[in-house]
Amino acid sequence: MNLNELLNIKARNNPDSLLRLLVTTAVVSIIVVVMFSGYGFYRVFSGFVIKTAENNSVQLCRVLIEQEKKFIFVETPGKTVELGLNGTGMLAFDKSLRSFLSPFKIIKVKVYDAGKRIVYSTDPALIGKVDHDNLRLQNALSGRTDAKLVTKDSERDLTEERLLDVDVVETYVPIVDKGNKVLGSFEIYMNVTCYRQQILQGAALMTALLSLVMLAVFGFSYLLIRGGTGQLKDVQSQLETIAITDQLTGIANRRHLMKRGEEEFERILRSTGAHKKSLGCIMIDLDFFKQINDSKGHLAGDHVLHEVARRLKNCIRPYDVVGRYGGEEFVVMLPDTSFEQSLLVANRIRCKIRNEPFTAEGEQLGITVSLGVSGSGEGDRSLTEIIKRADEALYKAKADGRDRVSWVYHPFDTEIHS
Image 1 (cartoon, helix red, strand yellow):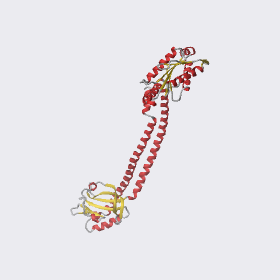
Image 2 (tube, rainbow, N blue to C red):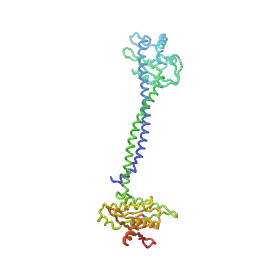
Image 3 (tube, rainbow, N blue to C red):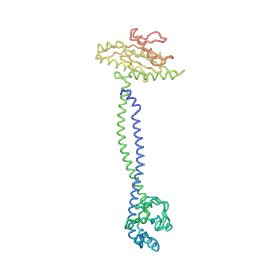
Image 4 (tube, rainbow, N blue to C red):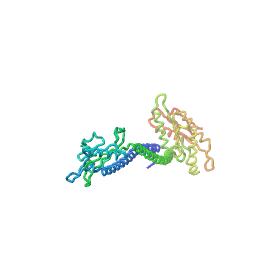
């Protein structure tokens, strides 16, 4: 993978975008987990209440059956046991049952026979009705206990007091004889409204604790990842700088120079009429640079190139573009600059380099440069045409004796030189 591919990956996967994605994912995850967990906790606590009420109902029924078996079971002449609860014994059973259940939170009792007919109820109006489609009752008549939490809009307790918005656990308990034959079923309503607030508070507390734990975990992860993305941004910034910078001189390399030049040329193509933009181009070459490398060494040559780049930057505006074109050649792009203004800038550069000696290896060196200048024209269709004219002008300056500014294809027909 080369440097350009790394930078393309950076454009697609910006660390800040990754961090925002993490935060979004964390928020959505917390909301989803909290919602499902809250519901789960509510179901767990509700299930506990139901199970407790079911166990209590079963135990109450067993004790009740044992205590009231003389009313509940009737032995027939054939020595078979059947469900009783009829005739004159019904009133005695009702009185005994109400007395027995008064300390408990039972608000209604029904007794079904094996044919799903109600043979007894604390609500006398229900006696004699048949509940054919009751699947829970069918479970009980099959020998299985069935309990469910339901909310009643209105219900009356054993004392005929009306209760509004009450939570009850309906429990169906099989009535079996000593031979484990199912004779019928109890249906007991146990009032668990008092646990409603406790269930909600318990579920809310557990959900809040889970939320805090998740926030702590995601918060710690966020800090770690933010630190990592900060380092990644620094690395990407360094990679980007490496990708666009000439390592020796610290100015733009050829690739970035051409990219910026293309951007400025696109601005020219988009502009029209009185607002037509212009672009000046200066190509610069150090005179006799090979002699410096051969006589003073490459370190001295590198120092000269670095110093030339520094002086070039000092001679242009902050938004002008300067880059190393190759070897000892440099290019300066001057946005919104006429040809005449470009000539003035080129001459300023030539004087800046010529009149201030360079120091290399403890020795002062006189350095001169040749410069070719061009400007954008109406017929230009690409940046290459502008650079080509500046390159031809540079060769003209070198052919005419170096240390001068030259141009081609323009009304001016003389060079600027000292």
